[in-house]
Length: 94
Picture (cartoon, rainbow, N blue to C red):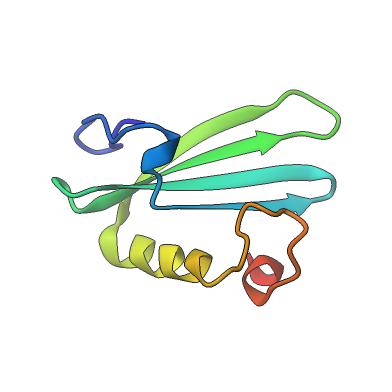
């Protein structure tokens, strides 16, 4: 993943600061958060696995450090953020 601001390589999936998967109307949405310490901003990759259609992805950002920090902290409160069927408060409000 490249930083959405400076384009520096932030590494692959193992370098994600946080990831969360949720299910909406049969589609799975996975958000992966990558932090660039050079720019002090977040880059977010959104992957959508459509139940009846093609999968897609997009990259959003740069996201302000304070906003990204808050979202990552919320994700880390979930016992299993990659479980799209998780019933925790974080997943229910995501």
